[in-house]
Image 1 (cartoon, helix red, strand yellow):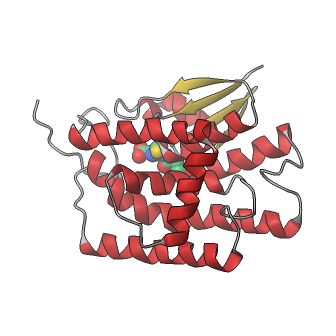
Image 2 (spheres, rainbow, N blue to C red; image 1 turned 30 degrees about the vertical axis):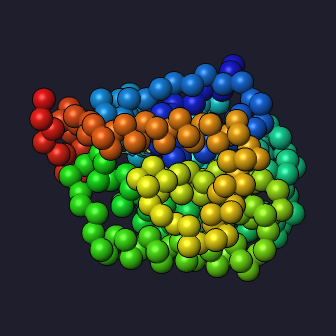
Amino acid sequence: MVLKLYAVCDGPPSLSVRQLLAKLELPFDLIDVDYCAGDHRTPEYALMNPQKEIPVLDDDGFYLSESNAILQYLCDKYKPGTSLYPVDPKIRAIINHRLCFNLSTFYPSISAYTMAPIFFDYERTPLGLKKIHIELDVFETYLERLGTSHAAANHVTIADFPLINSIMTLEAIDFDFSKYKRISKWYNDFKQNYPDLWKISEDAMKIIQHFAANPPDLSKLNHPIHPIRNVKK
Ligand SMILES: N[C@@H](CCC(=O)N[C@@H](CS)C(=O)NCC(=O)O)C(=O)O
């Protein structure tokens, strides 16, 4: 049975999985999950992913969430030994490290500043800004110390996609990160060298920018945590 990906059109974790599927040239059915309508908060969705988060991969009844786990699984199952996720223990460790770094600190700090105030009733604060600069400084240091053209090697790997999509949300709000020279070069090189993959991010960036200019009505989402903004109708 063909792979199914439950994805949200502007969500960085969903975009990263779509980029890998495109790079591996794996056919799949893309199922658009409407975040604003709360498609992911239903009891049916929770059967696939009790975390009620997007994306979810359905590989013939094998349901997998957490985008990093999906990236790793797709490489291991469908292209073992691919240069996108090499088996060499040290290269793989660096890739896994960068995936963990993005998941645990880099993207949470960035999205709290970029995405959360677009979709929910949050302010962009000086503390939030400070956290972003701390994270960018760390990533810049990793790029400098490793000295590679890409995030984890001298070629594209699954570590690049989530980091690219985190930075894309900064570009979406016109955040100037040009002083981070290595990050800027790596990000611009990705756009130039992988135009088809970048288009997946770019289309999402336009959707994020649309929502930034036209805050979505999330009153039906009933989000259990995030404060919903009053949107004038
Ligand atoms: N760690 C997860 C995060 C996934 C995630 O948080 N996705 C967002 C959409 S971009 C979501 O579904 N959030 C649930 C919610 O806010 O209700 C992953 O990498 O897959």
